[in-house]
Image (cartoon, rainbow, N blue to C red):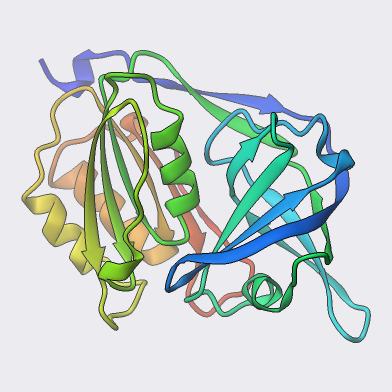
Length: 253
Protein backbone atom coordinates (compact mmCIF):
# COMPACT_ATOMS: atom_id res chain seq x y z
CA UNK A 1 0.00 0.00 0.00
CA UNK A 2 1.31 3.49 -0.88
CA UNK A 3 0.28 6.91 0.37
CA UNK A 4 -1.69 7.44 -2.85
CA UNK A 5 -4.14 4.69 -1.81
CA UNK A 6 -4.73 6.20 1.62
CA UNK A 7 -7.05 9.07 2.42
CA UNK A 8 -4.89 12.10 3.04
CA UNK A 9 -5.56 14.15 6.18
CA UNK A 10 -7.50 17.35 5.69
CA UNK A 11 -6.65 20.88 6.74
CA UNK A 12 -9.74 22.50 8.25
CA UNK A 13 -9.67 26.28 8.20
CA UNK A 14 -11.22 27.90 11.24
CA UNK A 15 -11.83 31.62 11.65
CA UNK A 16 -11.29 33.09 15.10
CA UNK A 17 -12.38 36.38 16.69
CA UNK A 18 -9.70 38.98 15.99
CA UNK A 19 -8.78 40.44 19.39
CA UNK A 20 -5.97 42.79 20.33
CA UNK A 21 -4.58 42.22 23.82
CA UNK A 22 -2.32 44.11 26.22
CA UNK A 23 -0.34 41.67 28.35
CA UNK A 24 2.48 41.94 30.88
CA UNK A 25 5.86 40.24 30.60
CA UNK A 26 6.08 38.11 33.75
CA UNK A 27 9.17 36.10 32.85
CA UNK A 28 12.01 36.13 30.33
CA UNK A 29 14.88 33.68 29.99
CA UNK A 30 16.99 31.68 27.55
CA UNK A 31 16.06 27.96 27.60
CA UNK A 32 18.96 27.38 25.18
CA UNK A 33 21.86 29.66 24.16
CA UNK A 34 20.25 30.90 20.93
CA UNK A 35 16.65 31.19 22.07
CA UNK A 36 14.76 33.76 24.11
CA UNK A 37 11.50 32.79 25.82
CA UNK A 38 9.06 35.51 26.85
CA UNK A 39 6.11 34.65 29.11
CA UNK A 40 3.06 36.93 28.93
CA UNK A 41 0.06 37.09 31.25
CA UNK A 42 -2.86 39.33 32.12
CA UNK A 43 -6.64 39.57 32.33
CA UNK A 44 -6.91 40.22 28.59
CA UNK A 45 -5.51 36.76 27.85
CA UNK A 46 -8.88 35.32 28.89
CA UNK A 47 -10.65 33.86 25.87
CA UNK A 48 -7.44 33.40 23.88
CA UNK A 49 -7.85 30.62 21.31
CA UNK A 50 -5.21 28.71 19.37
CA UNK A 51 -6.61 25.40 18.05
CA UNK A 52 -3.57 24.44 15.96
CA UNK A 53 0.11 24.23 16.99
CA UNK A 54 1.17 26.32 13.97
CA UNK A 55 -1.21 29.24 14.55
CA UNK A 56 0.37 32.67 14.55
CA UNK A 57 -0.22 35.90 16.41
CA UNK A 58 0.84 39.43 15.58
CA UNK A 59 3.24 41.24 17.86
CA UNK A 60 2.90 45.04 17.72
CA UNK A 61 6.27 46.76 18.07
CA UNK A 62 6.66 50.52 18.50
CA UNK A 63 10.08 52.05 17.90
CA UNK A 64 11.58 55.19 19.46
CA UNK A 65 9.96 57.37 16.77
CA UNK A 66 6.51 56.00 17.57
CA UNK A 67 6.31 53.98 14.39
CA UNK A 68 4.45 50.70 14.83
CA UNK A 69 5.27 47.49 13.00
CA UNK A 70 3.79 44.00 13.20
CA UNK A 71 5.50 40.64 13.10
CA UNK A 72 4.01 37.14 13.06
CA UNK A 73 5.05 34.56 15.64
CA UNK A 74 3.80 31.12 16.65
CA UNK A 75 2.78 30.73 20.31
CA UNK A 76 5.04 28.15 21.93
CA UNK A 77 2.43 27.28 24.53
CA UNK A 78 -0.84 28.63 25.90
CA UNK A 79 -1.59 27.56 29.45
CA UNK A 80 -5.20 28.58 30.08
CA UNK A 81 -5.16 27.35 33.70
CA UNK A 82 -2.12 29.45 34.59
CA UNK A 83 -3.18 32.29 32.32
CA UNK A 84 0.16 32.35 30.49
CA UNK A 85 1.28 32.64 26.88
CA UNK A 86 4.83 31.57 25.96
CA UNK A 87 6.66 32.99 22.94
CA UNK A 88 10.05 31.76 21.68
CA UNK A 89 12.40 33.86 19.55
CA UNK A 90 15.26 32.37 17.54
CA UNK A 91 18.24 34.70 17.81
CA UNK A 92 19.43 34.11 14.25
CA UNK A 93 16.43 36.14 13.05
CA UNK A 94 17.83 39.68 13.33
CA UNK A 95 14.54 41.55 12.87
CA UNK A 96 12.38 43.93 14.91
CA UNK A 97 10.63 41.12 16.83
CA UNK A 98 13.90 39.50 17.84
CA UNK A 99 15.24 42.89 18.95
CA UNK A 100 11.99 43.44 20.85
CA UNK A 101 12.53 40.13 22.66
CA UNK A 102 16.11 41.12 23.46
CA UNK A 103 15.13 44.52 24.82
CA UNK A 104 11.89 43.80 26.65
CA UNK A 105 12.04 43.34 30.42
CA UNK A 106 9.88 41.71 33.07
CA UNK A 107 7.11 44.14 33.96
CA UNK A 108 6.93 45.69 30.48
CA UNK A 109 3.68 45.58 28.54
CA UNK A 110 3.31 43.74 25.25
CA UNK A 111 0.60 44.09 22.61
CA UNK A 112 -0.52 41.15 20.51
CA UNK A 113 -3.36 40.37 18.12
CA UNK A 114 -4.96 37.15 16.95
CA UNK A 115 -4.74 34.42 15.97
CA UNK A 116 -7.30 35.47 13.36
CA UNK A 117 -7.54 31.96 11.96
CA UNK A 118 -6.33 28.42 12.35
CA UNK A 119 -5.54 25.47 10.08
CA UNK A 120 -6.39 22.30 11.97
CA UNK A 121 -5.05 18.95 10.80
CA UNK A 122 -7.83 16.37 10.74
CA UNK A 123 -7.95 12.73 9.76
CA UNK A 124 -6.24 9.47 10.56
CA UNK A 125 -2.51 10.28 10.61
CA UNK A 126 -0.48 7.13 11.19
CA UNK A 127 2.82 9.00 11.37
CA UNK A 128 3.99 12.59 11.45
CA UNK A 129 7.27 13.88 10.07
CA UNK A 130 8.05 17.41 11.22
CA UNK A 131 10.83 19.26 9.37
CA UNK A 132 12.00 22.77 10.22
CA UNK A 133 14.63 25.15 11.49
CA UNK A 134 14.65 26.94 14.85
CA UNK A 135 11.99 29.43 13.71
CA UNK A 136 9.65 26.43 13.33
CA UNK A 137 10.57 24.85 16.67
CA UNK A 138 7.72 26.51 18.61
CA UNK A 139 5.14 24.94 16.28
CA UNK A 140 6.91 21.58 16.08
CA UNK A 141 7.51 21.30 19.83
CA UNK A 142 3.94 22.27 20.62
CA UNK A 143 2.58 19.69 18.17
CA UNK A 144 4.77 17.03 19.78
CA UNK A 145 3.69 18.01 23.30
CA UNK A 146 -0.01 18.00 22.40
CA UNK A 147 0.08 14.70 20.49
CA UNK A 148 -1.94 11.73 21.62
CA UNK A 149 -0.34 8.76 23.34
CA UNK A 150 1.13 6.34 20.84
CA UNK A 151 1.25 8.83 17.94
CA UNK A 152 4.43 8.18 15.93
CA UNK A 153 6.31 11.45 15.36
CA UNK A 154 9.75 12.09 13.92
CA UNK A 155 11.14 15.63 14.09
CA UNK A 156 14.03 16.78 11.92
CA UNK A 157 15.13 20.13 13.35
CA UNK A 158 17.97 22.43 12.32
CA UNK A 159 19.46 24.38 15.24
CA UNK A 160 22.58 26.54 15.69
CA UNK A 161 24.52 24.11 17.91
CA UNK A 162 24.16 21.03 20.10
CA UNK A 163 23.43 23.14 23.18
CA UNK A 164 20.21 24.32 21.50
CA UNK A 165 18.59 20.89 21.66
CA UNK A 166 15.39 20.94 23.71
CA UNK A 167 13.79 18.36 25.97
CA UNK A 168 10.22 17.93 24.78
CA UNK A 169 7.89 15.91 26.98
CA UNK A 170 5.16 14.00 25.18
CA UNK A 171 3.05 10.84 25.39
CA UNK A 172 3.77 10.28 21.69
CA UNK A 173 6.29 7.85 20.24
CA UNK A 174 8.71 10.65 19.54
CA UNK A 175 12.04 10.55 17.69
CA UNK A 176 13.94 13.88 17.60
CA UNK A 177 16.70 14.25 15.01
CA UNK A 178 18.80 17.37 15.54
CA UNK A 179 20.87 18.99 12.78
CA UNK A 180 23.60 21.21 14.29
CA UNK A 181 24.49 24.04 11.91
CA UNK A 182 27.67 25.05 13.76
CA UNK A 183 28.00 28.30 11.83
CA UNK A 184 26.46 27.13 8.54
CA UNK A 185 23.77 29.28 6.94
CA UNK A 186 20.28 28.62 8.38
CA UNK A 187 18.78 28.82 4.88
CA UNK A 188 20.89 25.94 3.55
CA UNK A 189 18.65 23.02 2.54
CA UNK A 190 21.50 20.54 2.01
CA UNK A 191 21.71 19.25 5.61
CA UNK A 192 17.99 18.51 5.53
CA UNK A 193 18.29 16.69 2.20
CA UNK A 194 21.21 14.58 3.36
CA UNK A 195 19.35 13.59 6.52
CA UNK A 196 16.19 12.76 4.59
CA UNK A 197 18.12 10.44 2.25
CA UNK A 198 18.75 8.13 5.21
CA UNK A 199 15.26 8.45 6.70
CA UNK A 200 12.48 5.98 6.06
CA UNK A 201 9.18 7.65 5.08
CA UNK A 202 6.52 4.93 5.25
CA UNK A 203 3.11 5.25 3.57
CA UNK A 204 0.68 7.13 5.77
CA UNK A 205 3.28 9.70 6.87
CA UNK A 206 2.01 13.27 6.89
CA UNK A 207 4.81 15.83 6.55
CA UNK A 208 4.75 19.29 8.11
CA UNK A 209 7.57 21.49 6.77
CA UNK A 210 8.62 25.05 7.66
CA UNK A 211 11.92 26.93 7.31
CA UNK A 212 13.43 29.55 4.97
CA UNK A 213 11.41 29.82 1.76
CA UNK A 214 13.96 28.56 -0.78
CA UNK A 215 15.01 25.75 1.55
CA UNK A 216 11.39 24.67 1.91
CA UNK A 217 10.97 24.73 -1.87
CA UNK A 218 14.00 22.44 -2.31
CA UNK A 219 12.94 20.04 0.45
CA UNK A 220 9.36 19.87 -0.81
CA UNK A 221 10.54 19.13 -4.35
CA UNK A 222 12.83 16.37 -3.09
CA UNK A 223 10.02 14.77 -1.08
CA UNK A 224 7.63 14.74 -4.03
CA UNK A 225 10.03 13.99 -6.89
CA UNK A 226 12.62 11.70 -5.27
CA UNK A 227 10.56 10.08 -2.51
CA UNK A 228 7.16 10.00 -4.19
CA UNK A 229 5.26 11.76 -1.42
CA UNK A 230 1.95 13.12 -2.82
CA UNK A 231 1.57 16.88 -2.48
CA UNK A 232 -1.58 16.49 -0.35
CA UNK A 233 0.50 14.65 2.26
CA UNK A 234 2.73 17.71 2.74
CA UNK A 235 1.96 21.03 4.44
CA UNK A 236 4.82 23.39 3.58
CA UNK A 237 5.42 27.02 4.53
CA UNK A 238 8.39 29.33 4.20
CA UNK A 239 8.39 30.94 7.63
CA UNK A 240 10.94 33.49 6.45
CA UNK A 241 12.67 34.51 3.23
CA UNK A 242 16.33 35.47 3.19
CA UNK A 243 16.84 39.18 2.49
CA UNK A 244 13.15 40.07 2.79
CA UNK A 245 11.66 41.44 6.00
CA UNK A 246 8.34 40.08 7.32
CA UNK A 247 7.89 37.81 4.29
CA UNK A 248 6.62 34.25 4.10
CA UNK A 249 6.47 31.79 1.23
CA UNK A 250 3.31 29.79 0.58
CA UNK A 251 3.02 26.47 -1.18
CA UNK A 252 0.05 24.43 -2.34
CA UNK A 253 -1.48 22.12 0.24
